[in-house]
Image (cartoon, rainbow, N blue to C red; front, side, top):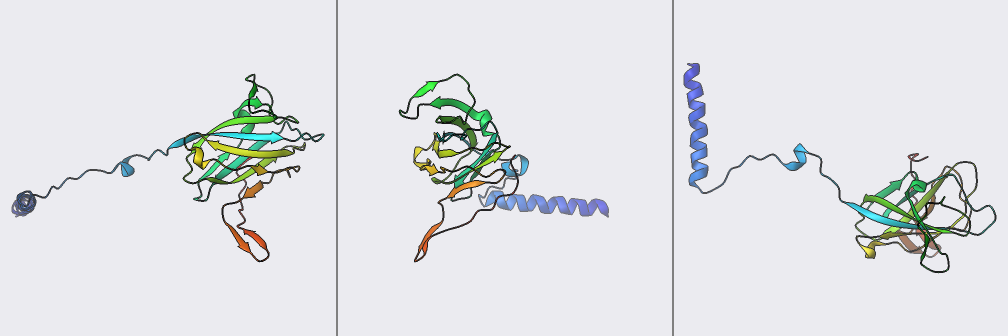
Length: 195
């Protein structure tokens, strides 16, 4: 009895397969790549330029974290920006002073950092900095250039004030609305992910 029912099941599967083949339809069972492996996100390279003002005591040796992104919530977080230092740039002319590794965030200097992260899909419209440590730091401006898509590069983000310690401080120009009382911006609240 069991042998006959196994035979019937096999026969039914054979008939269904034959009908699909006779109709010209293809039936294939392939596992999707998403179910077997994690999909790798495309990575992009960013050059971050940050100026430290010339005010007395504006420099810092503390760790600085950076967070930037676009209006599509593509958020790039760099916990220790100091370790990504590439070079120091002349503040008066856009040329490299030297390629010798030096401490970043010194007074009256412009530093460039190379960062790799997920790719943005629209222009970078927010940038936040976070200072960890005991000394003060007064950045002048910051800008992010996207190497793979220069049209996604940011405008200048101006700070020109001492940063508060251990909190994200910056600008978000993504969702601005003009109201009779001025510009209304969406407020971003970030968790404690960095130093």
